[in-house]
Amino acid sequence: MSEPPRRWQEHGLVSRLITIAVGAPALIALLWAGGWWLAAAVCVLAAVAAQEFRRLVEAVGCRSSPVLLAGALAFPVLAGAGRWDAAGPVVVAVVLAAASYGLTASRRAGAPSAVAADTLGALYVGALFAHLILMRAEIGLAAVLSVLGIIWANDIAAYLVGGKLGRRQLAPAISPGKSVEGFVGGLAAAVVVAMAVGAWQGWPVGLLGLIGLAVALAGVVGDLSKSTMKRAAGVKDSGAALPGHGGVLDRFDAVLFGVPAGYYLWRWLIA
Image (cartoon, rainbow, N blue to C red):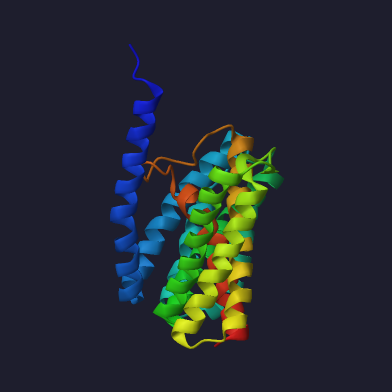
């Protein structure tokens, strides 16, 4: 006899909590250490996420190449080495390499989609993940922890408010579980947390509220974008690297979009 659904749900919740209890302190420790410790960890995350992205695009008929993984790893390495000024030439190199692979017999028929998948995957995974390293190195530990706190506050509040008050679906064709009420609650929590952190750290409170709103919105876009790819691929999770959470892309979807938004807004408005 199969196990009752409730038992499966409880097992999934326990796995999720264990992953958070282990993963969150580990991430904070790596951010505190910074330097090549953080860069190495981000490279591992980018490598796993690149493989998850490859499976998603291949599920819809796109053929990827080694350019996807190589490009995804190049950007964290650049950020870790303090050579982000070379990111532009690396983008050009990724496009040229992907186009060259598109000339091979096995990929010619689907060359446009294959080149697009390699290029997008390298940028989506590698370039976006690299901003964790950039923000830690250029702006500091307090700033990157603040941005992550904003993202987490948005996620938690959206989940709680949506579960209690959710009535209207936010994007039923993409992610039926998300509600308008949860979306608004998450944004409100993100702004409140951002302004509280600003007051605590002596940063401009109003500007921190604006950054909080923008980071939360970017995180929602990242979440929905990943959900769109999974729905197109016909899978529930992007992978199984993180018990209870699915894959790296499942757990870091909002971070991939929220941290770059926070990084540039912080540089323009605060730093």
